[in-house]
Length: 183
Image (tube, rainbow, N blue to C red):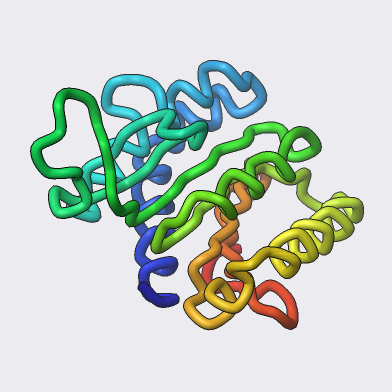
């Protein structure tokens, strides 16, 4: 997949979250219900995104919050459960920007998928956020998949904000992050 796959995911994410804006904002600072709405509840945001993109999805697959796949990605003649031989999208969600993001990025770097997505919520206007994003960049740049992520623009970070409400999408490039949409 290429940058258009990252654009497509970002657009679908933004569209679905806009439909749930009131509930998301009401729980923005309450991690547990917010996270449930994103990728755990029945009819969660991830489920809607999968439907909108024509994909199937599974939660908590090999320690990743969610993966998206097609019927062709399923292991044929499997005996129960979800066994995949390919992953379209590996998805991680971390509500707390200052906690565990390196772990989430590491998960995404070792799970081979056509698109890796991390959604998080940095404080708007916090200058330390810029320092952290440089660290995230160095982490990806040191990975064996760096060349692939640079060429295919298939490592997407989505930053969410409540004031003003909106989303910013950045894809990894060797020379820095490239904004592909949002505020």
